[in-house]
Image (cartoon, rainbow, N blue to C red; front, side, top):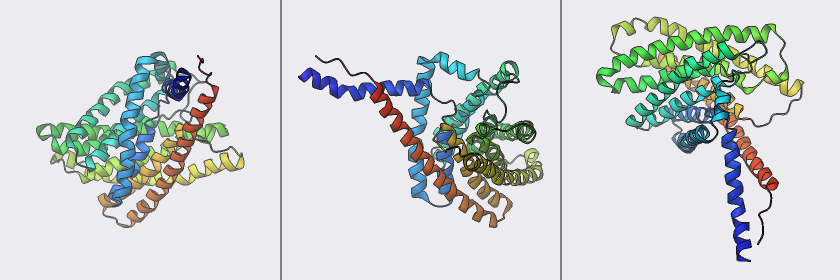
Length: 367
């Protein structure tokens, strides 16, 4: 009798372990978009002086970021074949840049709360991950993609740009505290800003050609499409951060007029995409009646909304144009509302998945 009770009580724990094992094995490469979305809205709320809400979201990331790092390491150790399969998949490889962007966004939240040493470590980790991914991902795209394989719509290719520009944003926080090494980092982040713009120019041409001149099916319209706006928004945010941070280097100061103009144009471009992306969503979910269900890719829709809010606020400061702050204020609440709906979908999906796994598991042997 006692053994039977012990077996019965241990069943949920065994089922939980088995369920977590399955989740780690199938971990979505872009899972750090959850950290990106949560962190950017937290940072935007911090700047809007809503400290309590900001701290609540920061606490969520304080849990989510190390958990996802741990899950990724466990996947590397226990499910190496599955991880490698995702890395060499042209549809998925660019999603790994969410690790870079998620780390930098989380680092920006830590910086707002005064953790200088941790911020430097996070930036260095993000930069190392970027170096490991940038040429590997393009190698996969060049040598393993095919005409029937991934395209710029199906894959979150522009997450590579988000990761690149996120290094610029956090770099403006790190560089002033580095003493003699600071100028080197300032030059590096200006270069990275340009690299991000170059990648955006390449990808946006492919993206526009794909959706404007080739057949588009409802399945092609995924939340990842919003990264086209988010990449432009984070380029705006990075440019504004460069404008607002004094490097004390005449060479870099001479670039300021160029950065001013391009930053404003990138914000305008990000703004232009928002109504079109809404129209595409309406076309899929209303015209074709495709139901909205939770998918980890939804966090890639939430992040651009939060990034647009923060980028608009920072541009308002860089351009000394206060009317833009009202746009930022409105957008941060829209982003928070969408975050709440997505978080509810995540919790419901995870619980349902666990319950289904528990129901499907065989009963323990009785003795």
